[in-house]
Image 1: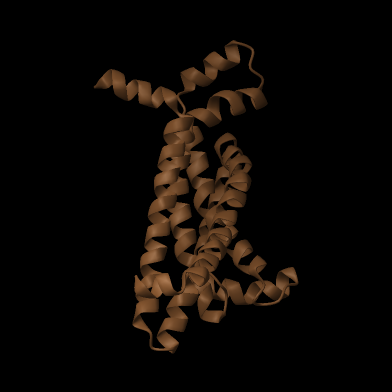
Image 2 (image 1 turned 120 degrees about the vertical axis):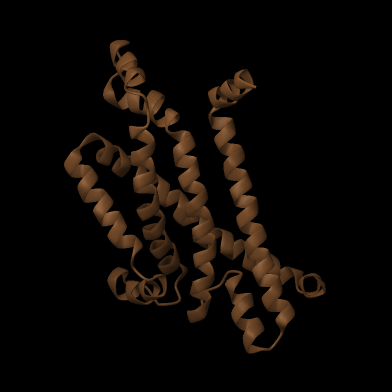
Length: 216
């Protein structure tokens, strides 16, 4: 704690970098996963194609991806864009299956009722199917967010910023307080983001709260 207080400006800057590098991929990955998850849920060939591709992408080693991306997307190896793109790949690989599973879990009678009421496919998806899938999607988002926060620290091995930089610098300079502080801050960051996602999920699904209250 003493080390953190004495280096508060550095800690705040590294925390800000860590949040940007870890949460931007979660947002972009979610935006890409929703239409791909819809496709996987609507078409058998789409499910096979997207889920197999997502499984393959998730098996790629993160450190190798950080190194091999620059020649592909035309950036420098220490460009933060490399981390964001690499982590977006991992988040997308996680969330495509989650979105597809969430949409397939929506009861058919609800979809049929919406169709009978005159909802066109796009409106039915946005107003009925996607909101009903929120609990499953939020569960996947929690895993993706925590994974992203953790994986950012891997980038510090080759010089990226974020709280992982405290690990490497603390080890190289033989300052165990810095290393321990970095580990604790990453854990706290993951817990805070996870709690916020749980809260967001509850706010977005008031019917779930009402059902829980009625059951109690």
